[in-house]
Length: 284
Image (cartoon, rainbow, N blue to C red; front, side, top):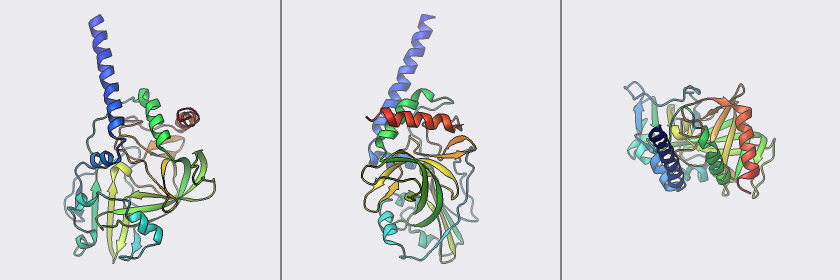
């Protein structure tokens, strides 16, 4: 009996140690981007493709392609297009405009890679550590509705990104450098999105930072982009930073390991209460 208890305790300490290791490893942004990739694929419509990872609570959604012209974008988009480095491997270094020459549609998929992280049906014991990490790394935390979006090609043309306009209805943690006000839209720039270039559709997705939908409401942990006054996700391969609120439920936008793991969705009011509590205590 005592020996069995000792084994359980040892197993618990090993898992907790592994979680602490993951938090430490993925605090480095370069490591975050490296480990988030896994095996990507590029598919031409009409050819067999691997089955992409999907979040069972958020079935895959196709976003409306943004009509674009090569080299034509706003000043803000030009700056954002330079943020998203490291996607060249998703197309083998080929530019998307070259892949569509003889195809109607091209899809580029970057799945969530295999990472060292605790997984299971109940990861509630890690919630406090998760919230401390996410809250303290956030410049702002808001609940808001996506009102519109616009997608473009990244700087080297191998992937896409999307600028979302978000109308906040609650600010849980504010940005002291540029305070967010409810009712005033903010721009959130994220990797992935669909564009229509010369009648050809390009769809790109990074499943670690999956697409948002216009008209849907989200809880967002954000980092400030001072060059444009916009925001971006907190890049981490293990910790989720975006959650959809739907019918009283909180659903991870991606299938990252934490905080919910394989147990989705969760009660929205309960999780928001934990976030508010963490904001008020853990970083002060």
